[in-house]
Image (cartoon, rainbow, N blue to C red; front, side):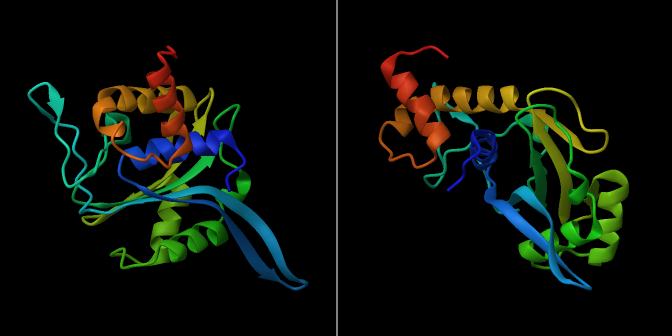
Length: 202
């Protein structure tokens, strides 16, 4: 169960954009006195190359492909043909990265948790993330993304929580007819759906 509502918002936003999400991934490192906690990665998000999210319209109604209801945010600059991996730091206040995330141990652990062939040596990917907060080749993109109420991370992508909330709300409005026929499990999407049904303007 996720206790941080900001993490819930980020997960809803990323899932709508076609990502699978893992939250609060703990990273530990073995030292002389045993294992110690290095950090936790708030959200690991993975979007597969075959995830073809439909945001297109057919006449006045949204076209839904294979039961997948999704919207694509241009701010994420998603490349459909690439595996897209995001390590997200989520803050209710200023967007920033914890020092623990900017360590080889944390980034190696996150990449190993995702698994699969990333088309490059993990050490090279980690070095690029530490230096530029992003790695990409012809098959994968890995990046660090900071979410917060205000501010901007020095390296990497920044997305405000206000933008994420607005995007989720627009998604619910856009697909209101389809969502009414579905059982929605995501708590943030379900909240906006309830507000929409109740005629409450957010």
